[in-house]
Length: 332
Image (tube, rainbow, N blue to C red; front, side, top):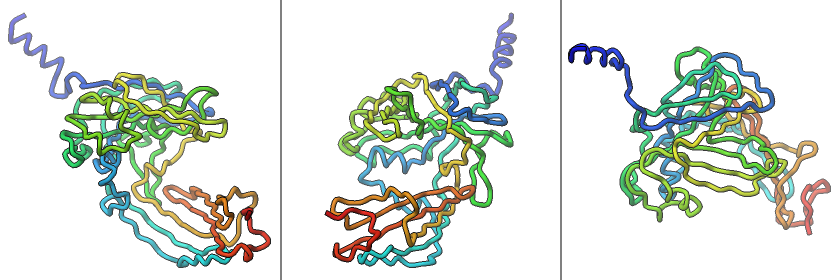
């Protein structure tokens, strides 16, 4: 073969669409919980978080969860707060529309015909997108840091994107997420969660929350996995938690939701109604302090696509003698 022919053959193999060798490759498996039935073509993708959420982990002193650049919230007040401490239930009623201003950035989507267990492989050809990279100079280090989660969803219109929802438009349906797993594991086994981490430079560990320092001190340059193990009891209540950094080629074990859900995390706008109840519902499990002078109960319910209802019962006492006959908290 002539040199010209060899070059032409090479061009044919690579072509303008050849992305080159991946910087790293994610591998994993999604197992099914409770015979979940998923219809349609599925997709598994990497979602890089906005840089502001990276700041929450490596520079918490500068993180403001009420930063107006995160969300735009517009509320309608129906009943102002009435919170007299005379044993009568507090009153409040408000409805709010929240619009997400900083969203995750989807990259590296891979499509699959859904069957379980679903084995997946996602090559990472580039460093994370610039809007997700937190500048470590802001916390006393240098370089960049960001995190991503891996999510699986039904790509209903097969457009290669996760179409997120609003109260007027249902999102495409998700069935697993590597970083937000809440399944009940087998007895003696931990519940596992994973973030993808990207790091260049040097981290000022003094700026990091103490509970995260040991894990973040293990980070290599480039890609790795943030791995969390949670041991829970038979009711799913947390017993212990540990965090570590694992190599990027560590297999990622994901478990489906018990049903196909339109997760709040996949809404770019959502409505929430917060209403205080005039009485506790039947068979509640209210929160009571040791002195018994305060009672609190709360229930959150999805009532529609990207719509939720938050019901609250709250009351307090300054004088135990004022406690009504049906006061739910024991007073010593």
